[in-house]
Length: 300
Image (tube, rainbow, N blue to C red; front, side):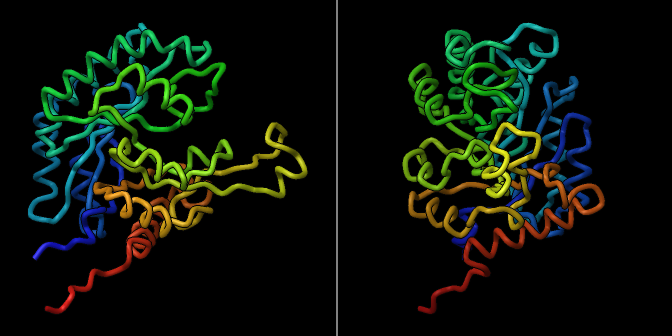
């Protein structure tokens, strides 16, 4: 009998740009993770993705672990060599997602650097309309992470899909059903946007969820504001931040959402370095508890 609790899986991200994804999966597969998101930063470094996918699945073996999503993070809208490698990486991830067992590729939209957000829309439409068709032909969804990468409406280097007003614009430019969001509450909290109501409105466009949280220091805001020398917010591993993930997962379930919540580590100012996996495994167990804990079969 299948476990309905796992209609929402809890997993983590693993770096893939350096070729270590399969080895890393093998190292941590027995820690309780239910899914993995291998991700690339700007380039695949010319790796054979079909072979990498095979090795990742071999590392999983017979365990009940899935790879639903690949990550390809960079700026595919600009023209430098590395930007073009990012665009090629998107194409290669889309073409080879099935070798991982994945049905989604996620990352940033890209952006025309240093210009207002709306200036990127024509180039966005040009690039992503073509990629959306390529992905649809392969049965693959495209998900944009809602991370500003320190950008805003007026300027930025990486991504325009960081704000709900921007989502309205980009989904108008690309109304394709297979283009949506890789959502997480953290990136909304960093800009003091209430994340929970977004699920009710945007759930049909949420294709993948990142497990990342934030701690907002309201005392700092009241004394120093948000543009002062004192940091007013920190990105956190789930279980250490302000988000009630029980409510997040409940809202996702109410919307009929299924998929993976993959923990995005390496950001927590406390649980990092030697404490990285301590924090991630805590987040894993915390999110499973927020999901309802151990599944109990209903007697018949």
